[in-house]
Image (cartoon, rainbow over all chains, first blue to last red; front, top):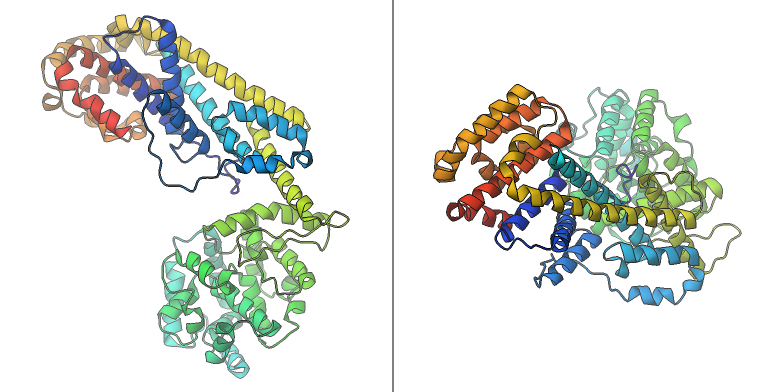
Length: 160
Length: 459
C-alpha cells in the first residue's frame, strides 16, 4: 500500500492529531468572538469551515506539503496575516507553461483532468502532473481524516 | 598481493579471521555495534554471523581489507582501465558492508587508507559521505558479491565479470544463501541499490550481472540519500523493462543526479519521447496509488475514467467538510446557551446512568470552586490522567496545563476510557476540555487570559 511504498510518501498522522488541531482552532474561534456572537449563520459556517481547513493543513504536516502550504497562505492572506515558511527550494511556477507548449505530446486526456484537479487541490496551479497526483493522494487522505473527525464531533455533540 | 591473499585464505578459525589485531577488534566492534543500522545491514550482520563457519570467506575478506598499498594507488588514481574499475567496484562493494571497513580504517589499518576518504566518520551519516565523496564506494554492500570476490580472489582478472553470473551454484553456504533469500523477501525495495555501476562497464555483461543481483535482491545498506530515492524511483521501471525486454536496461549515473534511460527495443530513441515515456510511467504509477485510496476505483479502468472518479471523490470530500461545518455551527449555537447541559448529558453515549449522575453531581459541585479560585494554584494534577488515552495523544504542555485545571474531568475521562468506544470517547473528552475551558473563560476572564495565549503561541 501507500505506506509501504518508499517512493512516494503519503503518510498522514493519526486521527487524534487532526482532532486536537481542530478542537484547538474551534476553541480559539470561540474565544475570538464571545461577545460579538456573529448573528449571521453564514459567517459562522465560513469561519468554522476555514478553521477546519487550516487545522487540517497544520495537522497534516504544516508547511511540508505543497497543498498545505498553499492553504495556509490563502487563509493568512484573507486575514491579512503573513505565514512564515521555512526556507525551501521553491519550484518556479513557469515551468508549467514551458511544458505546456508541448502539450500535444502529453496525453491530452490526462492533462485535461489534471487541470480540473488543479482547481480542486489547493496549490495545484504550480505543479507538474505527477507531483500533482502525489499531492492529491495526500490531500485525499487528510481530507477523509478531517471528515471523520468532524463527523465524530457532530455525532458526539448532537446526541441528547 | 595475491600471494598474501592466498596465504591468508589458508588460515582458518571459528571467529572471523583476524589478520591483524586492529582488524580483529574492528571486526568485533562491528559485529557488536550493528544494532541501529537499517535492516539490510542487520541482514548483513546475520549473514556474517552465519558464515563464520566459512572461514575462507572471512579470511579472504579480511585479507582483502588488509591488502596493502599497491591496490590503493590504483584506487586513488582515476581509473586506469577496466581492471581498476573492477577492483574499485569490488572494493567499493565490500567497503559498504556494514561499515566494517570504516572501523578498520579508523583503527589505523593500513589498508583502510583506501577507505579513509569515504569512511572518515563513524556515524551512519558516513554512508552519505561515501556517496558524495567517492563514486566508487557508492555501491551498497553486497555480501554475495564480496563472497564471490573472495572466491575468485584474483583482482587482476579481467574475466571477473563473466564469472559473476552464477553466484548461487558456487555458493557452498546454503545457510547463508537462505539468509540471503529471507532477506531478499523482506526488502524488495532495495533492488535498485545493486544496480549502481559505473557507466564505463560493458553494458551487456553488466545488465546480466545486475539482473542476477536484482534477482538475489541482496539487501544492501541503505542510506537515506536522495540518490537512492532516485534509483528506487527508477527501479520499477528498470525491473519492468528487464522483464519485458531482455537486455535493455537503465543505468544510473552515479556522478550526476539525473536518470539515464535506455531506449526499449523497437521504440523511438528520440530524447523527447524517452522523457515522455518516463513521465507517463510516473503518472501511471501515481494513478495506481490513487486508485488504492479512492474507494470503488478498482473496477474502473483507463486513465480518463479514473481521473474523473478521483475528481468526484475530492469534490465530495470537500462538500462533506462544508456540510459538516454547517452542522457544527448549528450545534455550536446551541452550545453557547447550554454548556452545562451538554457537558453532563450529551457526551456519554454508552455511560451508565448511575455513573452519569455521579459525574453530573461532581461537576456541579466543583464548578463554583473552579470559578472562585485561581486555576493554577489550587488544582492538582490528577495522576490518573496520565494513564488516560487522551493524554497520550495530547502531547502539548499547554493542553496538559489546562487539563490540570479540571480535576473533575479526570473522573469523566476515566469513566470514558472504560468504555472502549475509541474515537468518540476520546473526541468527546477532548470536547469536554475544550468547552470546559471555554466556560471558564467566559466566567473568569481575568485569570484565564494566559491559557488561550499559550495555545495561540503554540499554534
